Image (cartoon, rainbow, N blue to C red; front, side):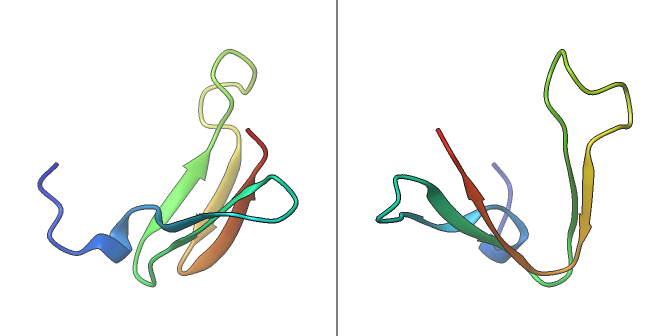
Length: 57
């Protein structure tokens, strides 16, 4: 994908004992999480910098 520094994308993905997927995001990036077809253009949650997150599949 052209990324040489993997901390810039979702990384460290693991299944938690609660059935959720956990991961991390690097220290010098920003991201916006939006739900396709639900959130309006530009809406969603905005993150800047490093973070840990979880997702229920």
